[in-house]
Length: 224
Image 1: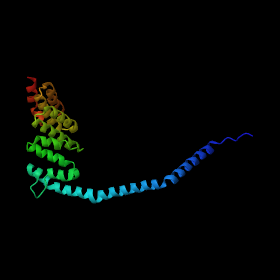
Image 2 (image 1 turned 135 degrees about the horizontal axis):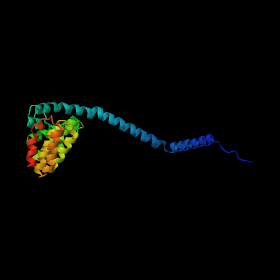
Image 3 (image 1 turned 180 degrees about the vertical axis):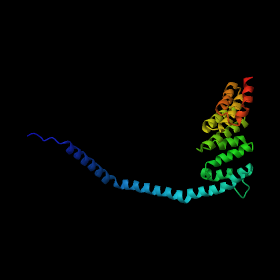
Image 4 (image 1 turned 30 degrees about the vertical axis):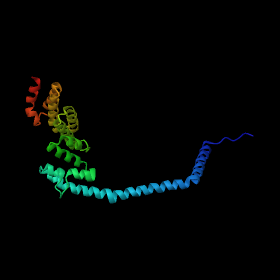
């Protein structure tokens, strides 16, 4: 007697039943482990939520409150006070030591700018390299200031690299000043051709910038 062949739907149904059966066997064998893993995941998730609400967020708020006086001192040009505090209010250095970036990524930029203004170029480099803000203008400024710090250390090669990044991030009239700084650093390295390229870019691409009004002097100096 001929065996009746199974239809595609019967084959599919049989496969589904087999998979369900295998799952039931697996679950019956390892259900304690499965529920243990689920419970652990729930506990970890609740712990993360609790940490965020009761530890991390309050520390962020405290850090931001501590940063306000330091930012005000910075705006007033009190760079040492902004950086180191006075015993009553914290400076950026102690805020970073205590809270890290919980006061915001800008604390590294502020600290780096303070060190730069105070002539502490190595410390400025250390802070500025830790700043990783995404806002284009501030990111470009941080790179330009990093270049300034390298110039202060007479490390013109790294200064040029920093200025190049500043120009790439800026893409606006601020780029003209960064290009001039890059050109001056290139001159220190003896690369007048590359420096000339920077100056001509200012002249051609940013003719309305402040730097463009005096750029012919820079061009003439490297063309001699």
